[in-house]
Image (tube, rainbow over the protein chains, first blue to last red):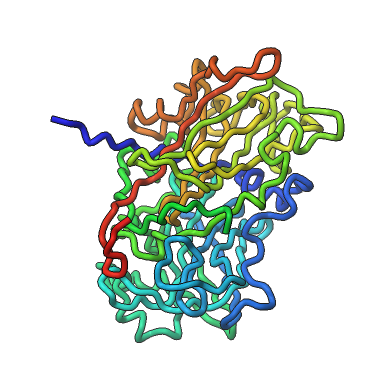
Length: 203
Length: 249
């Protein structure tokens, strides 16, 4: 019989304690190699949509903030289009990359993104997913990057109908994927372990 | 737009990740993972458009010295100290297709095993001409290459006498957010690979061997630099028909 011949994915390894050297060198005072840290600015003055701030911490199993992580986010623009060659539904806002990268602060472990509220995108079967931002987290001690999503608290109806949130077997855990809101600032606290452990995704 | 290949973008969902091939989140031999590993099962879900899509990083963002760690932080006319090497290879997906336009970022310790980072406490000396980071974007065949110095091994506070083998960290951004991967490359023949608790988080010996780059004598440059070849495999994706794309991929 013929072999299928698929390759194996390269195994993941921890980003280590010094992930900043590689991904955000300016942040750790290795200046002059690149013009600026990638992903540090998601919006400009022409970006369409409602400006928001997304901020929060990543907490470890003792409740201490992780202060050596890097967070990346990926989201649709305000019209619900991804700025990606794989986006087949139309052209996204050219002034919005949709991708951001931010280290957590070495002092207090806070991450922060200035972005726009994303529009809705469809699930595979055509149902609408609630507005959300995809998160990916790496740090020392995280052997394989963690995927999760942030949803918006004012979108209760859309969240109730969201196909991904509906898959969470223990309903009380849905709250771990929904940010809290104060004006235009959304706080999304990510917990790696414990009673309120964030729902992480294998997608 | 000249940075985007003419090939039709793939829009299929990604193959499920073989979690048994990757290190588990909780690996007590690597102590930091104990408090940083999720304890609950991951929510499994076929990737949606939110994970199938991903940003494009154009070649235009790459500076002339971005893939030359020997010179990209050095003072004019000087260069980093150490054994000069070239690291090169291809980024492929699980179907063996080249991943063009992938952003490959890499970082490492200097020849003495010391990182340029304020939290670094190892006694080895800082090299004033070595920053330790570089990046490049794969070409249409999925190929990347960079010049650097071979990093040194270094001790770390895990066990009483734990050392990391010489290694280079790699971050790869392919075509979809679900493909995102960070890994490490090790050097063939280094006996310390098999003593390292971080390497040891990977359960399968064949998976570990996938991270060990062989000396590539054919591409070694006489009187200049030895070469190591390191191919990287990202998740593959199914080539399926979409209602809005009946011609497939």
